[in-house]
Length: 241
Length: 34
Image (spheres, each protein chain N blue to C red):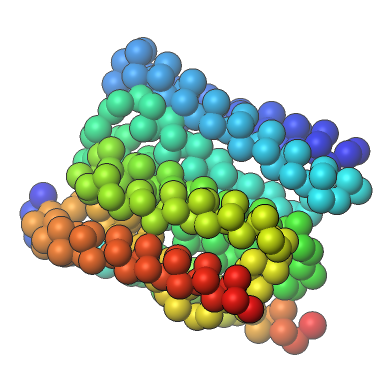
Protein backbone atom coordinates (compact mmCIF):
# COMPACT_ATOMS: atom_id res chain seq x y z
CA UNK A 1 0.00 0.00 0.00
CA UNK A 2 1.45 3.41 -0.97
CA UNK A 3 1.94 6.05 1.75
CA UNK A 4 -0.82 8.12 0.14
CA UNK A 5 -3.32 5.23 0.31
CA UNK A 6 -2.24 4.46 3.87
CA UNK A 7 -2.76 8.10 4.73
CA UNK A 8 -6.23 7.92 3.08
CA UNK A 9 -7.07 4.91 5.30
CA UNK A 10 -5.98 6.87 8.42
CA UNK A 11 -8.08 9.81 7.23
CA UNK A 12 -11.20 7.62 6.97
CA UNK A 13 -10.56 6.32 10.52
CA UNK A 14 -10.05 9.86 11.82
CA UNK A 15 -13.17 11.11 10.03
CA UNK A 16 -15.07 8.45 11.99
CA UNK A 17 -14.17 10.30 15.17
CA UNK A 18 -15.96 13.45 13.94
CA UNK A 19 -19.33 11.73 14.45
CA UNK A 20 -19.33 11.28 18.28
CA UNK A 21 -18.02 14.83 18.72
CA UNK A 22 -20.71 16.09 16.31
CA UNK A 23 -23.42 14.21 18.27
CA UNK A 24 -22.20 15.74 21.54
CA UNK A 25 -22.23 19.24 20.03
CA UNK A 26 -25.71 18.68 18.54
CA UNK A 27 -27.10 17.53 21.90
CA UNK A 28 -25.57 20.42 23.81
CA UNK A 29 -25.85 23.33 21.40
CA UNK A 30 -28.31 22.36 18.65
CA UNK A 31 -28.07 21.51 14.97
CA UNK A 32 -26.54 24.60 13.39
CA UNK A 33 -23.45 24.98 15.65
CA UNK A 34 -22.95 21.20 15.44
CA UNK A 35 -23.06 21.33 11.62
CA UNK A 36 -20.54 24.18 11.60
CA UNK A 37 -18.37 22.12 13.97
CA UNK A 38 -18.61 18.99 11.81
CA UNK A 39 -17.80 20.87 8.60
CA UNK A 40 -14.92 22.77 10.23
CA UNK A 41 -13.36 19.67 11.79
CA UNK A 42 -13.80 17.47 8.68
CA UNK A 43 -12.40 20.16 6.36
CA UNK A 44 -9.33 20.73 8.55
CA UNK A 45 -8.80 16.97 8.79
CA UNK A 46 -9.07 16.46 5.01
CA UNK A 47 -6.70 19.34 4.23
CA UNK A 48 -4.05 18.32 6.76
CA UNK A 49 -4.19 14.62 5.85
CA UNK A 50 -3.89 15.49 2.13
CA UNK A 51 -0.81 17.58 2.92
CA UNK A 52 0.64 14.70 4.98
CA UNK A 53 0.01 12.28 2.10
CA UNK A 54 1.58 14.61 -0.48
CA UNK A 55 4.63 15.43 1.66
CA UNK A 56 5.30 11.80 2.65
CA UNK A 57 4.86 10.54 -0.94
CA UNK A 58 7.25 13.20 -2.25
CA UNK A 59 9.88 12.63 0.46
CA UNK A 60 9.81 8.84 0.61
CA UNK A 61 7.54 7.12 -1.95
CA UNK A 62 8.04 3.77 -0.19
CA UNK A 63 7.58 5.11 3.34
CA UNK A 64 5.74 2.76 5.70
CA UNK A 65 3.71 4.50 8.41
CA UNK A 66 4.47 2.98 11.80
CA UNK A 67 2.39 3.04 15.04
CA UNK A 68 4.32 6.08 16.31
CA UNK A 69 3.32 8.03 13.18
CA UNK A 70 -0.31 7.18 13.92
CA UNK A 71 0.10 8.68 17.41
CA UNK A 72 1.66 11.77 15.81
CA UNK A 73 -1.24 12.00 13.35
CA UNK A 74 -3.75 11.94 16.21
CA UNK A 75 -2.18 15.26 17.24
CA UNK A 76 -3.43 16.54 13.88
CA UNK A 77 -6.83 15.11 14.80
CA UNK A 78 -6.71 17.11 18.05
CA UNK A 79 -5.85 20.25 16.05
CA UNK A 80 -8.76 19.64 13.66
CA UNK A 81 -11.17 19.28 16.60
CA UNK A 82 -10.03 22.71 17.81
CA UNK A 83 -10.66 24.03 14.27
CA UNK A 84 -14.17 22.55 14.43
CA UNK A 85 -14.85 24.26 17.77
CA UNK A 86 -13.65 27.59 16.38
CA UNK A 87 -15.87 27.10 13.28
CA UNK A 88 -18.89 26.23 15.50
CA UNK A 89 -18.76 29.78 16.96
CA UNK A 90 -19.66 28.29 20.36
CA UNK A 91 -17.74 30.15 23.05
CA UNK A 92 -18.51 28.06 26.10
CA UNK A 93 -15.25 27.59 28.00
CA UNK A 94 -16.94 26.18 31.10
CA UNK A 95 -19.38 23.92 29.20
CA UNK A 96 -19.12 20.75 27.11
CA UNK A 97 -17.36 22.49 24.19
CA UNK A 98 -14.76 24.03 26.50
CA UNK A 99 -14.02 20.74 28.24
CA UNK A 100 -13.84 18.88 24.93
CA UNK A 101 -11.38 21.44 23.51
CA UNK A 102 -9.25 21.59 26.67
CA UNK A 103 -8.99 17.82 27.16
CA UNK A 104 -8.18 17.39 23.48
CA UNK A 105 -5.44 20.00 23.82
CA UNK A 106 -4.01 18.13 26.83
CA UNK A 107 -3.99 14.93 24.82
CA UNK A 108 -2.23 16.55 21.85
CA UNK A 109 0.18 18.86 23.64
CA UNK A 110 1.18 16.60 26.53
CA UNK A 111 0.22 12.93 26.22
CA UNK A 112 0.86 12.46 22.51
CA UNK A 113 3.73 14.97 22.22
CA UNK A 114 5.68 13.71 25.22
CA UNK A 115 5.26 10.00 24.52
CA UNK A 116 5.80 9.72 20.78
CA UNK A 117 9.46 10.85 21.09
CA UNK A 118 10.62 7.98 23.37
CA UNK A 119 8.42 5.52 21.47
CA UNK A 120 10.05 6.64 18.21
CA UNK A 121 13.53 6.23 19.75
CA UNK A 122 12.53 2.76 20.98
CA UNK A 123 11.37 1.68 17.52
CA UNK A 124 14.01 3.62 15.61
CA UNK A 125 13.39 7.08 14.21
CA UNK A 126 12.98 8.13 10.60
CA UNK A 127 13.45 11.57 9.05
CA UNK A 128 9.92 11.58 7.68
CA UNK A 129 8.52 10.66 11.11
CA UNK A 130 10.49 13.56 12.63
CA UNK A 131 9.08 15.96 10.01
CA UNK A 132 5.52 14.78 10.78
CA UNK A 133 6.21 15.22 14.51
CA UNK A 134 7.46 18.82 14.19
CA UNK A 135 4.70 19.85 11.81
CA UNK A 136 2.00 18.27 14.00
CA UNK A 137 3.42 20.26 16.95
CA UNK A 138 3.36 23.55 15.05
CA UNK A 139 -0.11 23.01 13.63
CA UNK A 140 -1.52 22.10 17.06
CA UNK A 141 0.18 25.21 18.55
CA UNK A 142 -1.41 27.45 15.91
CA UNK A 143 -4.86 25.89 16.44
CA UNK A 144 -4.44 26.17 20.23
CA UNK A 145 -3.55 29.86 19.84
CA UNK A 146 -6.67 30.39 17.70
CA UNK A 147 -8.78 28.54 20.28
CA UNK A 148 -7.29 30.55 23.14
CA UNK A 149 -8.25 33.74 21.26
CA UNK A 150 -11.74 32.44 20.41
CA UNK A 151 -12.89 31.23 23.83
CA UNK A 152 -9.94 31.86 26.14
CA UNK A 153 -10.14 35.67 25.88
CA UNK A 154 -6.51 36.02 24.79
CA UNK A 155 -5.60 38.92 22.49
CA UNK A 156 -5.05 38.26 18.76
CA UNK A 157 -1.32 38.92 19.02
CA UNK A 158 -0.72 35.53 20.67
CA UNK A 159 -1.21 34.04 17.19
CA UNK A 160 1.70 36.08 15.81
CA UNK A 161 4.49 33.73 16.95
CA UNK A 162 2.86 30.47 15.71
CA UNK A 163 2.15 32.20 12.35
CA UNK A 164 5.67 33.63 12.16
CA UNK A 165 7.04 30.11 12.54
CA UNK A 166 5.50 29.23 9.14
CA UNK A 167 6.88 32.38 7.48
CA UNK A 168 10.38 31.57 8.79
CA UNK A 169 10.00 27.88 7.87
CA UNK A 170 9.18 28.68 4.22
CA UNK A 171 12.04 31.22 4.05
CA UNK A 172 14.42 28.67 5.58
CA UNK A 173 13.29 25.89 3.21
CA UNK A 174 14.54 27.99 0.27
CA UNK A 175 18.13 27.48 1.43
CA UNK A 176 18.16 24.20 3.39
CA UNK A 177 16.19 21.03 4.06
CA UNK A 178 13.55 20.68 6.76
CA UNK A 179 15.79 18.28 8.68
CA UNK A 180 18.81 20.62 8.59
CA UNK A 181 16.60 23.51 9.66
CA UNK A 182 15.74 21.64 12.85
CA UNK A 183 19.09 20.04 13.66
CA UNK A 184 20.75 20.87 17.00
CA UNK A 185 17.98 23.04 18.34
CA UNK A 186 19.03 24.70 21.61
CA UNK A 187 17.15 23.73 24.79
CA UNK A 188 15.45 27.13 25.05
CA UNK A 189 13.41 26.40 21.89
CA UNK A 190 11.59 23.61 23.72
CA UNK A 191 11.33 25.65 26.94
CA UNK A 192 9.77 28.68 25.23
CA UNK A 193 7.47 26.31 23.32
CA UNK A 194 6.30 24.71 26.58
CA UNK A 195 5.72 28.16 28.14
CA UNK A 196 3.67 29.19 25.11
CA UNK A 197 1.52 26.05 25.24
CA UNK A 198 1.05 26.45 29.01
CA UNK A 199 -0.35 29.92 28.40
CA UNK A 200 -2.89 28.52 25.91
CA UNK A 201 -3.78 25.65 28.28
CA UNK A 202 -4.31 28.13 31.14
CA UNK A 203 -6.39 30.49 28.99
CA UNK A 204 -8.66 27.67 27.80
CA UNK A 205 -8.95 25.91 31.19
CA UNK A 206 -12.68 25.35 31.90
CA UNK A 207 -12.07 25.81 35.66
CA UNK A 208 -10.19 29.06 35.12
CA UNK A 209 -10.95 31.53 37.89
CA UNK A 210 -9.64 34.87 39.11
CA UNK A 211 -6.09 33.73 39.88
CA UNK A 212 -5.59 31.99 36.53
CA UNK A 213 -7.09 34.96 34.68
CA UNK A 214 -4.68 37.33 36.43
CA UNK A 215 -1.67 35.13 35.60
CA UNK A 216 -2.82 34.81 31.97
CA UNK A 217 -3.33 38.57 31.60
CA UNK A 218 0.20 39.21 32.92
CA UNK A 219 1.86 36.43 30.89
CA UNK A 220 0.19 37.02 27.50
CA UNK A 221 1.80 40.43 26.67
CA UNK A 222 5.22 39.09 27.75
CA UNK A 223 5.00 35.73 26.03
CA UNK A 224 4.32 37.06 22.50
CA UNK A 225 7.48 39.23 22.12
CA UNK A 226 9.60 36.55 23.84
CA UNK A 227 8.31 33.87 21.46
CA UNK A 228 8.75 36.09 18.39
CA UNK A 229 12.28 37.02 19.53
CA UNK A 230 13.11 33.35 20.11
CA UNK A 231 11.77 32.42 16.65
CA UNK A 232 13.80 35.15 14.92
CA UNK A 233 16.97 34.35 16.92
CA UNK A 234 16.64 30.68 16.01
CA UNK A 235 16.09 31.52 12.34
CA UNK A 236 19.22 33.70 12.13
CA UNK A 237 21.21 31.09 14.02
CA UNK A 238 20.16 28.41 11.53
CA UNK A 239 21.00 30.54 8.50
CA UNK A 240 24.42 31.50 9.93
CA UNK A 241 25.32 27.87 10.76
CA UNK B 1 -15.63 29.70 39.38
CA UNK B 2 -14.68 29.22 43.02
CA UNK B 3 -11.07 29.24 44.16
CA UNK B 4 -11.49 25.68 45.39
CA UNK B 5 -12.64 24.41 41.98
CA UNK B 6 -9.80 26.30 40.31
CA UNK B 7 -7.20 24.82 42.70
CA UNK B 8 -8.63 21.31 42.22
CA UNK B 9 -8.47 21.75 38.44
CA UNK B 10 -4.81 22.76 38.51
CA UNK B 11 -3.96 19.98 40.98
CA UNK B 12 -5.51 17.41 38.64
CA UNK B 13 -3.59 18.98 35.75
CA UNK B 14 -0.33 18.78 37.71
CA UNK B 15 -0.91 15.11 38.56
CA UNK B 16 -1.59 14.39 34.89
CA UNK B 17 1.64 16.15 33.85
CA UNK B 18 3.68 14.27 36.47
CA UNK B 19 2.15 10.93 35.41
CA UNK B 20 2.89 11.52 31.71
CA UNK B 21 6.40 12.80 32.47
CA UNK B 22 7.15 9.71 34.60
CA UNK B 23 5.89 7.45 31.82
CA UNK B 24 8.08 9.34 29.35
CA UNK B 25 11.15 8.78 31.54
CA UNK B 26 10.40 5.04 31.84
CA UNK B 27 10.00 4.76 28.05
CA UNK B 28 13.20 6.76 27.51
CA UNK B 29 15.13 4.41 29.80
CA UNK B 30 13.79 1.41 27.87
CA UNK B 31 14.71 3.05 24.57
CA UNK B 32 18.26 3.75 25.75
CA UNK B 33 18.77 0.25 27.17
CA UNK B 34 17.91 -1.40 23.85
